[in-house]
Length: 394
Ligand code: AOF
Ligand code: ZN
Image 1 (cartoon, helix red, strand yellow):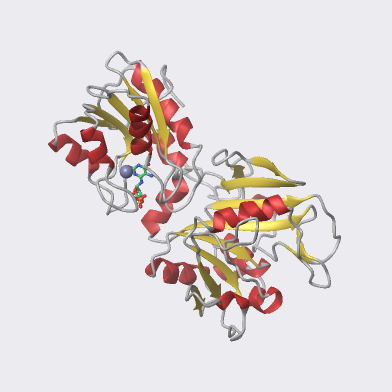
Image 2 (cartoon, rainbow, N blue to C red):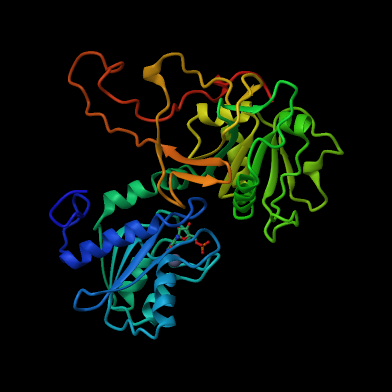
């Protein structure tokens, strides 16, 4: 963060923000981190009074739930707080569409809010246009405060929207020595019951779960979302299997609810295009190691969740089987993700590690000399190299 107030508008945006507004935007950015990543971005909203006093903070709890603005307005309503004449600070342009929830522009206008300051435009076509709608209704709208932070907060989401592909969460359930199965193939269960429950909770809020044909042939998983008592969760993801081998007619993954699909490809980009075309906006890649490796090698993972069991096997199936990296300077760099409960959580006897790709470093063009292999420069991003660097087929 920069500047005396901690936040400054993005370069080129000329406007004035009060210290109270800058503080409120910082609070909104922090609040956004409480939400989970996925089909929707992390968003926070803070309403301040005409005197700059902080009144209420809201945030978005993931696709299908109230948006940050609606959350803040609902909280104010719950305690009888009148927001007429107040200013809303929000980390993303308020939406102007009826998606899974109603338009935030309408809620803002109905609440009598007269000023809106948002950090960055919403690049998502159906939701965009909120600023114009608010202005047309007489609301004073300014933007750009905290833009750098807001872009960074959701950088993978912005990338997925721009690429028109689903947001990708990759999940690994492994031992301390990074094995996902023992030598004889047994793998149930490496993770604690608490980790399994956490994974099922994620399954119930994503659009699709993706595994390789190898996993179907070896493990024959159901891949449904289930409650801790084993009942099916109310919301079930599409169950996608990718690979060129046939899925046996009696595979458990097929189920009888019509939610299973076979994606006849080994290419992770193609699998994502197929899923996107049929409406998937958030997919969780579950395994096995070839699929995990191919998505990681292709730089197509937006969020990484590792359930780490304090168990050793010493041999067996490694979580990953090659990312095409042979030298340390080429290693993929990840960073701890503080959102959604934090970077490290204890789940029973396991640790749950939460990461996202390290931010790509903007490299200044060099006037002369070699362009790469500078030992001072961190590796910018998980590789964007060919997806087939991972070994083997699936
Ligand atoms: C906001 N505030 O807190 C969020 C927004 O399917 P829906 O109704 O949840 O809409 C999802 C889209 O709305 C999402 O793709 C993004 O463009 C925007 N997200 N907008 O005003 C929020 N999370
Ligand atoms: Zn909205």
